[in-house]
Length: 150
Image 1 (cartoon, rainbow, N blue to C red):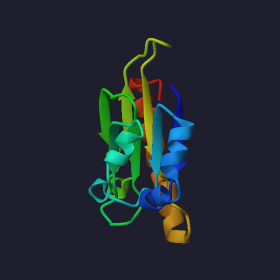
Image 2 (cartoon, rainbow, N blue to C red; image 1 turned 90 degrees about the horizontal axis):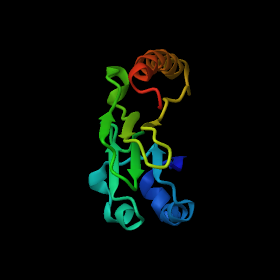
Image 3 (cartoon, helix red, strand yellow; image 1 turned 60 degrees about the vertical axis):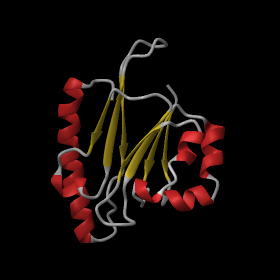
């Protein structure tokens, strides 16, 4: 499975700058997007479907035009999880996971996560980032007990 990750710094702006051409040329099976800065209702979802990604999942921040992550996939995941349960971060739309069944090529199930960490642009945000990273590490350690191929 070919997986790509791309911080688009605004999906609408990225589309205007040739993102879809890049996506078609790169041709990953799954792409994780960060900093989408849009709700799916603001997008023409057919653009992604026409590019070969009929399965697309969007986890936007509650604050309009802020952060947010997405996963686009050529194949349907068997499970999609929005957020981590870490309340201080989930409202910012920073984590989205898609679980895929074992493929015939390698025989292993795989989980793919699109993660967008907060910046540390000032002391308050840096403390917020470090707190999230500590809590996220605990979350991942627990998750990997059930999903080792993450």
